[in-house]
Image 1 (cartoon, rainbow, N blue to C red):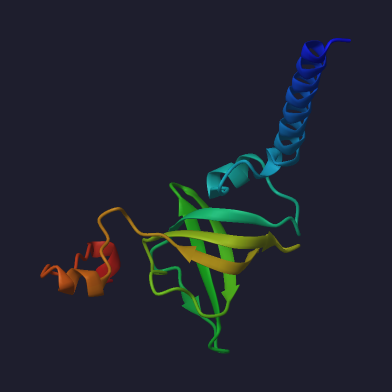
Image 2 (image 1 turned 90 degrees about the vertical axis):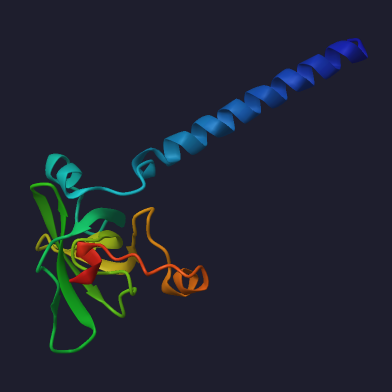
Length: 148
């Protein structure tokens, strides 16, 4: 076999190996392709208890309840009419408020309660941290949802 044919064969084998590796990675990540599940997604396709997922949506109005232990909070994640009850034990981020976006990482327990081990609070694109707002001489942007 000529050297030219050997290089061509090796190049084709390398491309096939890359393609195979891509297919393996895609099949391994097919369940985790979504950044998060919304309550509406969970109503259509429930997730088994114990499976670690990300739950995303808006924190429902008047749904945050602090438990007597001081570190556990119960809240409701809403996505339109669909809702999911959740619990978090720890210190939530400063942006975690009612009527604001949230992505909670955790799993459902056997009673259907989503037990979060991490909370990621989201803000809209107009949000500006107070320190940056003061530096720029702007008034801190507050919407009705943040003012409550």
